[in-house]
Picture 1: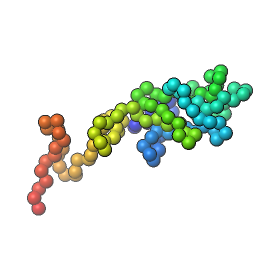
Picture 2: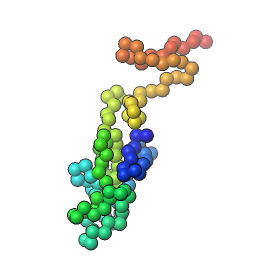
Picture 3: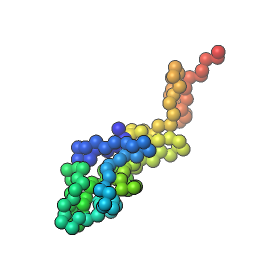
Picture 4: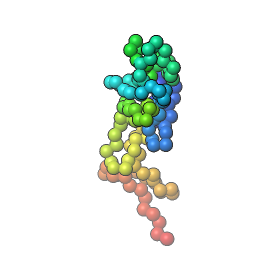
Length: 126
């Protein structure tokens, strides 16, 4: 899949195509610093939200996770997300976890690459 595994926990894609990592407690602002997700420090160091083995108090704030290599992280509406950092250059194409997907080959024809272009067999005349 496109979404990363963090500390052995598989994350899941939401309906926007982003990988949802988790959600900060509603009373604690979610934020990022460098390549890590956090939420506001807790005075006693008791971090209630620990979705991963590496989550917890880092002596200053509640650390959620490090953004996995090959991804970039962001915070939106109290939720932690990633996107794969692979950018597909062709407009309308999308990274599928292994390649840049452009379009499906029509059923019943053979697709190939010829002279650096996508081609498929001619459709029969009806």
